[in-house]
Image 1 (cartoon, helix red, strand yellow):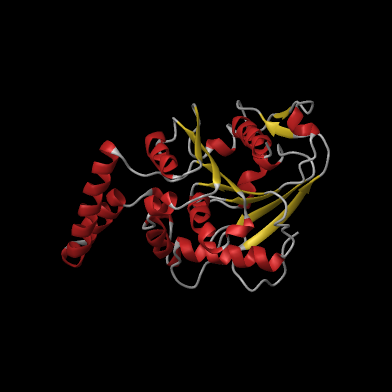
Image 2: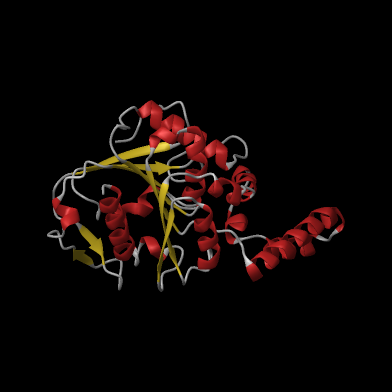
Length: 287
């Protein structure tokens, strides 16, 4: 069910899972359905949980479809399209992570169907994890636990040195840009800009610049929710060492590392492994 004419830009979609068989997809191909073992304890318990799913940069709410279909019976799911992605209109000006968190909180409060007396779990992928870190400041009552999938990490060691070098180079580029030929400007933009930056246009490029400026270390060190962090050793966009550094800053952070899956394939080919870890976390959170 899609909300009608909301006074906010974030789009929220609801899906309720009744007691039924659950299908996911094999790790070999996303086209091969595999019937999960519904005799396991996590499927026999009626959890009545609520889950909020927030996608990464460049994705939309449908990216979680493989995972949601693995969740326990009698669960309700709120899938989000952030402004500028999917069905949600782009912001009128560049937004920061704080702007996204405030808009999401407003959208969920206006919907008024979240039962805060029952368990609510926030699930974020990549950029969605940034929003979770900020959301606790403005709406801590809207979720109780957090699951972060491939969150942006904190650069350490060699990655930190590379980050400092690129930052210095970027500042030099911005100073010299008015004096450089167009060919040199295009080359430096391709060298210095990330894939997301090069793909973004207009207001979304301005938004991305503000998003990556978020002080992750400060936000993580103040984060108090019980959090499961799922990362992959094969993820080159958010390396495991940087994710571990982020997790260590959170007072209740628990890191689970997987093998072989990329930043994107954690939600597709890796959805069986990720879904299993999420269900285990849901069971553990009740104990």
